[in-house]
Length: 177
Image 1: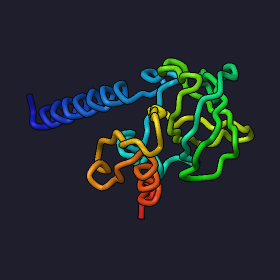
Image 2: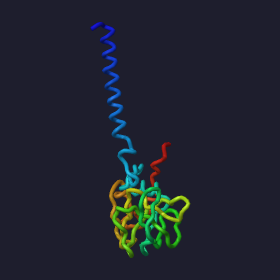
Image 3: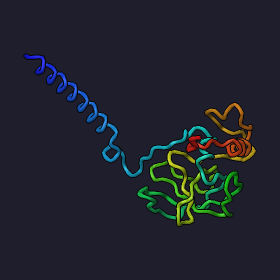
Image 4: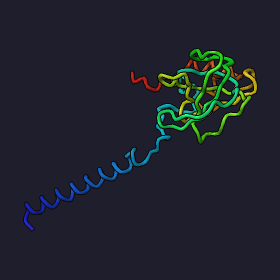
């Protein structure tokens, strides 16, 4: 084998390795092949109330009045619930709102009280529970908060104080500055 042939063989082998690695990475990161309509990649840590509050349009405590049907919102099948707002921590949803909750998640209980972190659905009057989050049940806004994550050491001892603190100290995960 001549020196020129060795160089070509080495270059061809190197290209084959690079092409194989590229193809391998492409196959494992192809979202069209690996994700369904109900899957999402969230930029926020769903366990950190500050990041959830920073991502949400509205954070409020409310009681589920009842189911209001089902609908498909941007390809995600959702159950709709009427919720009477007891206290708003962020945003200002009016007295009773329609909340969409992704199907497959544990259903909300009529009469149950929850803290909701929601995003407003464009061109609709629906508040969608943030993907990957679960409305936090509570018995009383003055009851001790069940918290975890970075906020647990500094959050107030009650449900209301915890969420007020999270909103006051919200983290914008989209801020690149």
